Image (tube, rainbow, N blue to C red; front, top):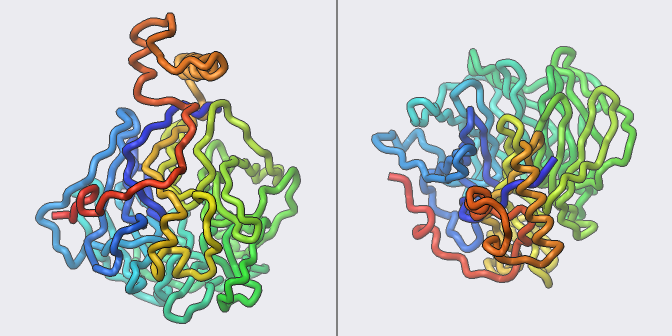
Length: 405
């Protein structure tokens, strides 16, 4: 594995949601420090062409605004075929439990009619799809002010919501965990709870155990694991490759740690392994997006601490909803990193050249005696570039991300 690309110019976002379809990655909404999220503006959509490594903002025209989700964060998005289903999340004024569907062929939003027992509005939940069912687990219910540990299923054929009765011991109350689907199992890892859960008292509790739901038996199982378990965390990312699931990044408030490590879990042997790709990884961060396209993983956005930083004591301050000055101690990223799981010989050569430049302290590509075509390929990115996490001035939202027409 090689970190092969590091570019800037991505949407500056935290707690956004993303879905990969074909060679495109669709991102929806998210939070950005210094922006007013009290207004119910239409959610923005940015698309990454993973072949050309270019972003663009999708402008929706002739769209019924009543069917468009408002700009939000802490939501989830999954896809079935060309349809992307967005659920949950909040802005500074409210939470949502409306189901939205974005058709990537027509580029139109709809709000499908749903039936049954809908989940309470929440954010920080997880969602994954197994066969034609969307599963929603956990999160934080803003109306009640309680963490959730319930499990809902949406039949995407009949559009009927059900709260599932399961056997076995379920995962504890939590939010900002990950749910990863492998075959007919949904694997839950990480997340943040509270010692007084389901109440929130700002005494965070973290879990490093794995739970999985066998959806065919509707039974929760906590397997015995081997290897070195990752430190418990929340707001990390997860992806599946060749039957294993991987986690990247995250945050543990009790240890005051942001992470930049990659850990792999093998569900067959139930073993954790720490993965050490060549190249320089993204700086430690949380609440980024992470999507697999073919044999490459694309990581973008998220937030990292700027030291010294204050102790964040409430959920509102964590989001920057109460005191905007707290945002000056976190940097929201606009970068893109690519982890190549099966790098080509050319990619390996390019990384080797950057390694040589780092070792010899060569700062200008033109000082290298290599083919001109390789120099051109290397100009757009530097996998060994250290991300600056100094204080920056955030341009206005309207300047960078105009309201959708």
